[in-house]
Length: 363
Image 1 (cartoon, rainbow, N blue to C red):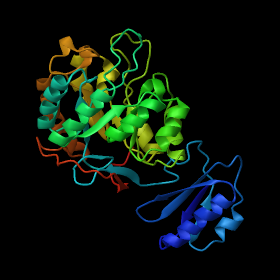
Image 2 (image 1 turned 180 degrees about the vertical axis):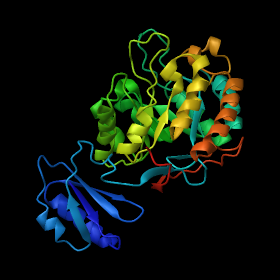
Image 3 (image 1 turned 120 degrees about the vertical axis):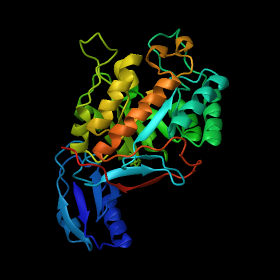
């Protein structure tokens, strides 16, 4: 169920409706919009009796949400969600594209800073790097843990880029939450519901990557798990699905971008590195992702990929990333988007802000 408040409803009236919902044994999720506040109701096993809520002061209407993903849905919030970082030009969901770049894994301080300098200079607002690496083989490089998180915090201090890194379980999430600006939930954990719930109790934005065989509804339901715990700062990430194709590591499903934007108010970015697994396909698919309306890119870059401890074959050389950025800058204006100029991102801001944003309407 969804309670739609009147445009002139006061904060006290919104609070009173939330208290009433919780007194009935449900959970209230007030989500401000550009014109009015909507209050999502979760925890109900059947239809909520609308009568008592409809009569409350400031309530415009109570409507039934038919989709299983309620908080993620545009039924709850029509406007696109914008996740912003005050004091910087780093955003998800606004007219500016979010560009995330860095190595698959933090291997050493020297390696991380070498890559950070180049991607920062090229215009990336976010630095990615794995501190914890869930690998198919138990004998593969598993990451440096907290040491890597400290390195990325130093990169943020020097270059002003926000940090995006993955938490692989509840224990690692505690440390990632302390150091990072955006918590990544990887494809293998998209349906790790206890981890999603824990991320939902964090104050940091959460990026949920699509599982290797996940449908659109399953993808949105993973985001719903995070939001149901009270964290509405969620970013979706398409990173390719497993198919019969063998010419790429995965099949990058760009059709999911407009599909998500039609159904959900959440921003969605694209990972062409994992989506293809081939260095020579990353730039073409990045161009396509921007053209199809994605809110950003997350790209793997390594200064010496042939010696990388993880995913070197899909990592761009810094020069290739610079060329990718040059091409994206030409495509972005065609679809009403902007890309930061070279080296213009601002210094670190400590606070996360969320507000309604505007992006081109999905067809």
